Length: 132
Image 1 (tube, rainbow, N blue to C red):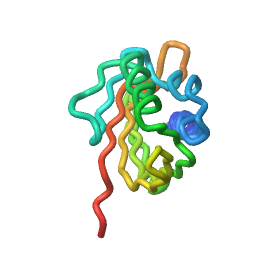
Image 2: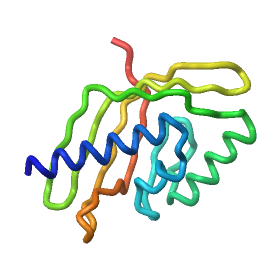
Image 3: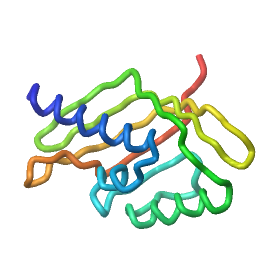
Image 4: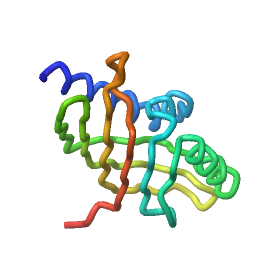
């Protein structure tokens, strides 16, 4: 169980690092193709990695969207047979045509261990952090 927890944390670290550094192929490869995404900034659930890639490309084309940095804190892993829920707080610096902004959000990522023993994300849910 300890090894699974460490492997999930490594998978989450790799996902966050790829996101933070703009390594989009590595970021999107951290998910299963049929992963779903719920973002507080979109009207509806995103139904696949392919749809998310199109959405991302639209953000870039329309607003010049770019991730400058992302930091993960308050991390927790919960494990069930072949499934893990990773929750954390994220602070993300982004750039758009309007300037730079720092986002404070909470995120849940559900991971599934594949037949190859690799942990891939199957769902991501992002919400704004509530100020205390």
